[in-house]
Image (cartoon, rainbow, N blue to C red; front, top):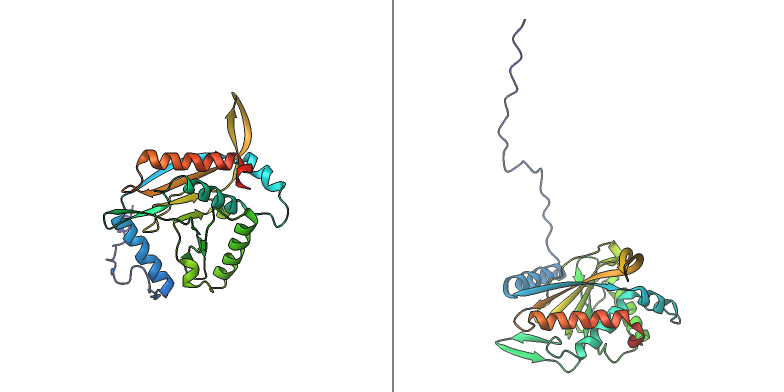
Length: 241
């Protein structure tokens, strides 16, 4: 029998070429600003996160009864958050230079995708606006974000932020606090799931929402009360009109 062939000798890999040719892409101004802000937030904000599930069955039915143009789920979330913030002044504030700031206006930022980054245009005075007004604001801001036409005044002045990835089918995620805001709400997809109601398994539209907050200004109980109030408002949507 002939001797078996010698196994091939592994050649050392040159680390400089192991990944192939690299293409370097310079950050745009918006991308650089976003990178700086999230890095600063992660490095300096002692964040606390809480998650709850919201039964959206009543909200889905409520939307079906509204006249056109019908607000989307995110518009209802903006309104619910704004009303809850009005009852929780510290959550509508910031921790800055060893002091608490509480803001008189409730301005909710809404994260949107631009051609090269992510921005959070502001719905000003969201607590006093109707759902139709909020829907008109977010539709206009979404259009401007997609066109890359958002201006700095439209991005400034938020006291809280809502971030949704539901359109991508994401059910749960944790968002990074937008400094110096006290908190941000991450919203997953509204979808039918099997849940137990009165001892019976039924299909209900539900959504997971996660509140990330600056633990220096919002303690666990504060954050839990805020999240509970947002859930209550969404599960009784008549209060949003």
